[in-house]
Image 1 (cartoon, rainbow, N blue to C red):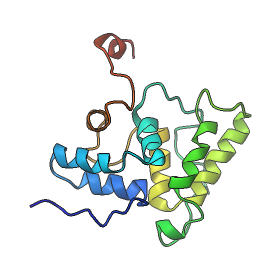
Image 2 (tube, rainbow, N blue to C red; image 1 turned 180 degrees about the vertical axis):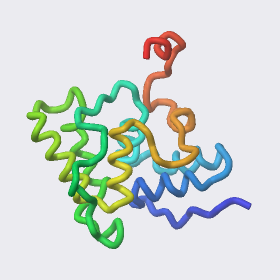
Image 3 (spheres, helix red, strand yellow; image 1 turned 90 degrees about the horizontal axis):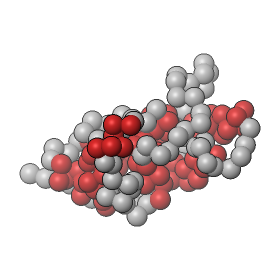
Length: 161
């Protein structure tokens, strides 16, 4: 019996989408649910940020500094901001983006983290670490769901990484 995730609206948080996807049993179901949100720029930026080799994050990927905590909001919708909007600041956090001082870049990142609900803040931190924290959502599944997310890797390009 298939699980019904029709309750996920088009403005569901990326964390909610990925959590729902991780609970699905079959690869086909996972791919179908991911594809349902493929038109959302924020969602695609998150997937690329987590898995694309050509995206280099320029902020520290270790633990957050002491005292830096996500928003104390009771839900995604009551947080100060959401990744569905905040992802636009990713451009300041990656190599090739606008030139900003490293201190400003880190300030942007920490402020994003602080403004997001816990699940979205954890997702933001995980993509900086280049790994999604959801079971069964691998780079291979994302690549199959969205073949044009990044260039196909050849044996030669895998060997050089």
